[in-house]
Image (cartoon, rainbow, N blue to C red; front, side, top):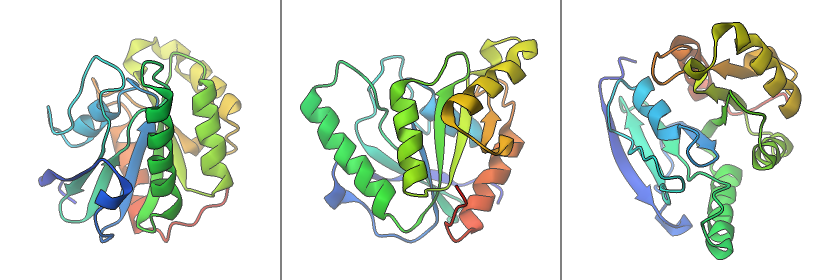
Length: 201
């Protein structure tokens, strides 16, 4: 995969707007403002393919990005943003749950957490949900350039313990600014795209 072709293909605001299943899908999820759009742009060497914003809760659609006609990156709305109404949170919760539970082309979920902080209750709930439904998941610890290198292993250990990860390889530190961790993350993405979607949680 040369990653030269990347384009936004589908924007869905409801379950009815989901595209037909075709290529393997890698989904990105995390709390609002954790850096999903920045991560996607960084992995694809693009500046603004995925729209970034300093305002949390901006992404209110599910966005499918086609990569080299080989796989899709699927950007899911951020969770845990208090200023969104309860009704809206519930509606989007149902849309995201339907996607994660029933999408057979979904091969792997990248759950993003901020390496500087302990996982939120929403992060832990999402991890438990993914584990319960046996969705193959990799934790991506974003904003790793914001801490000292001497703190890196300590923070990764804290996150692994808080999220109940058994395999250290299921958590990768990443920086969208420096692209630290990009090669390892691409390896996990391509492994997922080629898998049958099973997991050993």
